[in-house]
Length: 332
Image 1 (tube, helix red, strand yellow):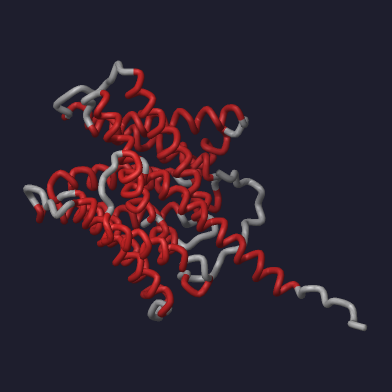
Image 2: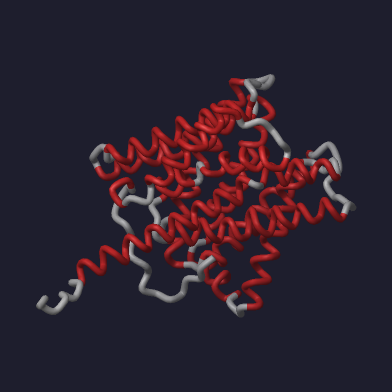
């Protein structure tokens, strides 16, 4: 006859709960990356309906996203959270919003100068490398071997995916394009680190997303004066795509990102967002019948394998964070 079962000790429960929290945060960040990955296809389909300027699309995306988030805050009677966020962290909120707007501008301009493949590899691939190095310097120890293995696997896959997506095209001004793509990567790393610090733990993801989007509108709107082309569309189908971009690829995606950053290290989160080009490639294959090929398929598998490796605690940079004790957060 067996004895009574032993109850789990508190330390075991804490480790289990912490691991589950890490996986939940990682899933939220991956969800954000998947939504971002559909943005390029949505932009292409939108411009097939109406030749509106890409910069105008970015501005409308930010404006619609901000409106959606503000509506949610009004319905939930939580507009005070956004006001409190502005009062507590005005400088950091502006940095996150302006940085998010700037990285999009850097990236889209770099695509026109160096091509989509190189711009994506540099713009997305450099950011997790930078954050991993910053973490190593901060902690005064090299990153774990498993972490390096995960990062290398994902980056090799990224190169293969983008080689297929770019079809070997480099663009008319490759040096300037690479510099702008690198600027996009650095800005992405900085804004993700800024959003993942005290500001994400002290504000709900919805309030942070609303503040970021409002700052983005303020920063980007003046640039419409330099646009050579239409900045407004009268096509209902184009407006549908604009609402998709603003409502899902901005509002929902950034709520997921900021929620995930509450429990996921910034370097891990940025690596997880490498699912973005994979999603874009798979979406183009399914919707536009663009060929993927063996190389592209191998790249997709490698990126997904690398991102899956992030689910193991040993591959994260820094400890897995326990859920905040405050109930002020709102989950996306």
